[in-house]
Amino acid sequence: MHGIWWAALVVSLFGAVGAAVLWWSAGRRWIVLLPVLVALPLSPLVNLFVKRPLYLALQSLTGVPSAPISALPWWFLLLVHPVPPLTEEAVKLLPLAVPGIRALLVPGMRGGRGEAGGGRAATGGRSGLVHLALAIGLGFGLGEAWWIAWGVARAGLHAGLPVYYFGGFINERLVVMFCHGAMTAVALRGIARALSHAKAGPHGWRVGALAAVLGGYAGAVLLHALLNVGAVLYQIGKLGPMGANLTLVASALLLVLVLERIYREGLRGELPREQVLWQRAGPRTEF
Amino acid sequence: MMGGGEGVKVYRPSRSWGRVWLSVPGALLGLGGVGQTVWAVGVPGDMPGPARVMALLTGLLLVGVGGAFLLMAVWMSSMRYELDDRCLLLRCGPVRYAVPLPEIRRVVKRDLAFSPWSSLRLPGFALGEVIYADAGRVVMCATRALKGIILLETERRKYGITPADEEAFLADLRGRLDRLGGGEP
Image 1 (cartoon, each protein chain N blue to C red):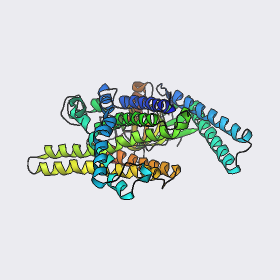
Image 2: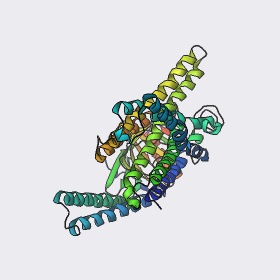
Image 3: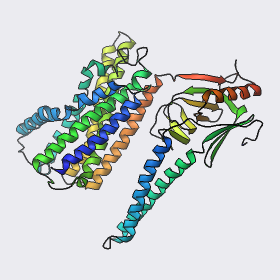
Image 4: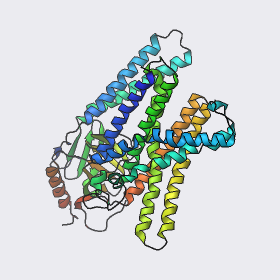
C-alpha cells in the first residue's frame, strides 16, 4: 500500500480529534458534525466537475498545451490562479442548503441562535458562525487530503516510501484544513451581515445584503488566493520547501487573527449570561 | 497583604482532568526531548556541527517544556483558596495571588469565551493571567478553563476560581464581604 494512504489516514485521525473538539466546544451538539459530513465530498466534486473543465476550457481558449505546472507560461498561471479560490470558496457554502446546517447560522430557525433554548445551547454559547465555518473547513479539508492522496498514489509518485516521509503532506493538510475553515468564516460573515440587513428594514436592504454577501465572498477568495501563492511558487520551482512552509504558516497566522476577530464580533451580540452573586453598593466600576 | 486575618478557612478547587492534561503531554515532550538530546550527543558521528547543536538545543528545549508541564501537574495538587476576614489568597505551588476583600466590587458566576491568546490554559487547568475573548484578562487559579467560573472583580483586576464546595465558599465569602460593609441586598 502506498505510504500516502497511511498519511491520509493520519490526517483523518487528527481530523477526528478536531471534530471531537468542535462537538465539545459547541455544547456537545451532534448537529455541528453534520457540516463536516456534508462537506467531505465537496473537494473531489469541485475538482472533477468544476475546476478541471474550467482549466481545460482556459487551455483551449488560450492554446496552452497540457504540461507540468513548471512548464506552463507565467501568464497562464496568473490566469488560472483565481480558479481554486473562486470555485472552492463558493462550493464550501453549499452545505448551507441543508436546513439543519443553516440553522447554525440563521437566527430564529429551529436550533438557531435566535430561538429560545437555542442560542448558547445551540452553539456552545459562542459564535455559531465560527463553529459552522470550522466544521465545513474540516470536512472539505479531509476530502481534499484524500483527493490529493488519490492523485499521488495514482501517479505512482513517491511509491515505496514509508509513511513518515509524508510528514510534510500531513502537516500541510492539517494547517490547510484550519485555513479552509477560517476562509469560510469570512464568507459566512458576509451572509450573516446580509441577514442582519434584511432584518433591519425593508428600505434598500437588498443592496446592503448583496454587498455584504459579495464582500464576504470576495474577502474569502482574496485570502485563499494569498494562501495559494507559496504553493504555486514552490510548484514552479521559484521557492524552496522551507519558503513554501513559511508562507503557509504566515498565512495561517493571519487567518487566526481574522477568525478571532470574527469570533469576537459574534460575542458582542451575545450578552454574557452571568449570575451576580454579590455586588458592592454604589456606582459600578466598568472595566 | 497576604492573608493572616482572623478565621482562615481553606477551600479546595473542584476536581478535574487537568493533571492528566498536564502530565501526559509533559511526559511525552520530556521523553521525546531526552531521546533527542541523547541521540544528538552520541549517535550521529557524521552529523555536521551546527545541525548537532540545533538538535541538542531542540532536545533540551523539549525537556524544559515537558519538565515545566510536569512541575505544574505536581503544583496542581496544592491548589487551594484561603479565605480570611481581610483577604482571599489563591495558591498553586509557589504561585500566589492575594485578593484583598475590601477591593472586591462584584462576584459573578459565568462562562468565559475561548481566545487563542492564552498563557496557561488547558482543559481542567488555568493558571496565571489568561486572555478571554469576552472578559479580557483574568487572573486564573482554577481547575476549569471556561465553564462555570466564579469571577471576583476588583477595581484593577479580575480573578477566576472554581471552588469544589461552591455553596459553602460563596456563603462564607458573602458573609465576610457583608461584614466589611457595602454589599447590596
